[in-house]
Amino acid sequence: MLAFPDKVGVAVITAEPARVLDGATLSRLGHDLRSPLTGIVSLAGLMRRKIASGGADPVQQDRQLEMLADSAAGLLTTIERVVTLARLEGPVGESPAVIDCGAVVASVVSSLAPLAADHGRHLHASTSPAPAAITPAAAQLIVTELLDNAIKYSSAADIEVTVTGSVITVADHGPGLAAGEQQRIFQPFERGAAAEEREVAGSGLGLTLAHRATVRHGGTLDLATGPDGTVFTVTLPLVS
View 1 (cartoon, rainbow, N blue to C red):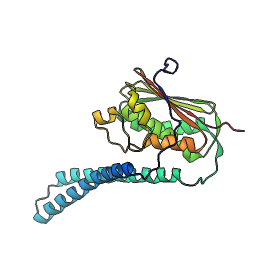
View 2: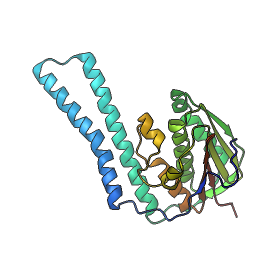
View 3: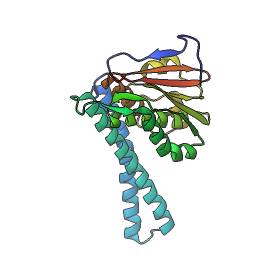
View 4: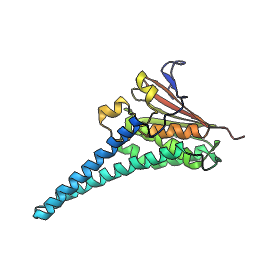
C-alpha cells in the first residue's frame, strides 16, 4: 500500500458540494452533450447520403455504425450520471441497510476485471467481511466510480483495493495529482490533467458521484496523493 508523509499532499474534502444546476455546470453539461450529439447527427447524415447515392461501402458502413454506437453510448452514460447526481442532491430515499462491504468490493472487482485488463491494469483486492450502514446501491456506486477512475487514469499497472472494517481504500501507483487539482477533483465535470493529456473519454462526474454518495450516507471520502500515486479512502458509518 502507498505511504505518504503526514499531511503532505493530502486533501480532505469536507466542503458542502455545489448545486448541480449552476451556470458553470450547465455550460459544461451542454458541451458534454453537444459533442456526441454532433457526431451522431454528422455520421447519420453522411450515411444517409451515401445510401441515397448508392455509393455505400459495407465495410465503411460498419465502422460508421460502430462510431454511432460509441457516441450514443457515451451520451447515455453522461445522461445517466447527471440523473444520478441530481438524485443524490434530492431528498433522501432508501434507508441505509447493514451490508457487507467486503462482498460489495469483491463483486465490483470481478465485474471491472475485463475493463482493467483492456487498459493493461491489474486489480488486487484484499477483503474480509465488513459490516457498514449504507444502501447496497450506494456502496456499489462508490466502489465502481473509484476503481473506474483508477483504471482509466493511473499510469501504472497495479491498483489495490482494501477493506478494513468500514474503511475502503483504493490506491494506484500513478503520477499523483497537482495541488490545484486536489481542491476541485470532486466538483462536477472537473477532470485532471492526466485525462486531458491522454484524451481519455469521460464525463468528469465519476468522483463527484462517489463523493456525494459517501457524504449522503454519513461517510467521508479523503484523498492522499504524492509522486508515487493516489489513495482514496472511504470511511462509512459503523453499524450501531
